[in-house]
Length: 289
Image (cartoon, rainbow, N blue to C red; front, side, top):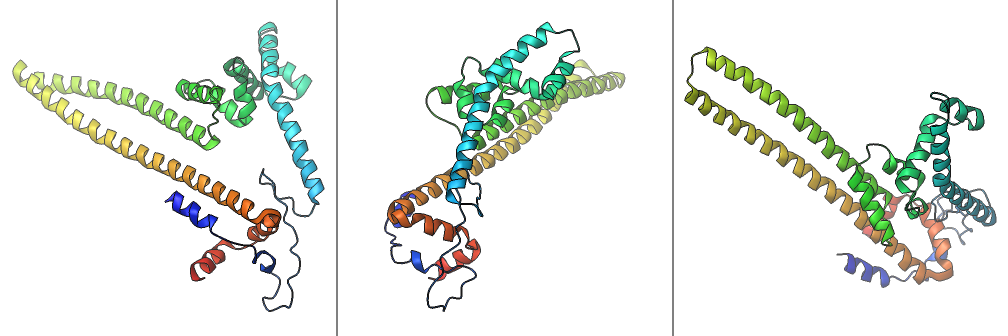
């Protein structure tokens, strides 16, 4: 399916259409199309409408510098905070943070957790956004997800933020289900003990009680299988959704790259015009063309 889609895109020729894309405010029967007011957008996705391309580039470069400085400082800051927290008197760390930085203990804990979790693998901090780093480094974060991310990044791969969040959510869901299963198991055992005492009070023999115990266990197993089946089906639906989103992302990236390669210097004109189009109308126009 994807290969056919890519091949079809490669056959498209926009060379004679770019200059004729009308702006939403320009009548379709006008003699000439006015130049489109640029809606400047860059790789980050931020809309810089209203400023020049030079200012947009400067703003993006500043964002990169700030982001890189912040990432570079996370582990070093976390290490310093860990050292000082251990040396200050009990209960004074929060006041020290507030006095010097106006920082909350929760924010400081994020830095310290990150330094502890990823101090030996700073590549993780170089690749991932701080919000994801803090989630992975948090106490109680699933260890298997943290190790998966470390292994992927060290090997040269870079899991997406959506994939990491999906794995974190799934692992936490598994942990909740495990705790719930333990709780239900204890309740089930207490319920049986109460039922057994009632059977004994009725004068049931040991053989009769054992037969009832087997029936009880069979019903329990049936309930557990039904519950497990529901969980499995939910996981399959979730995985299918994630795979579908990743596939659509790849298709979109390929389509954009093909258009850029095909249109060359005209690509930005096409992109800026495309971003102003109502997509529902575009879809209808494509289907009726």
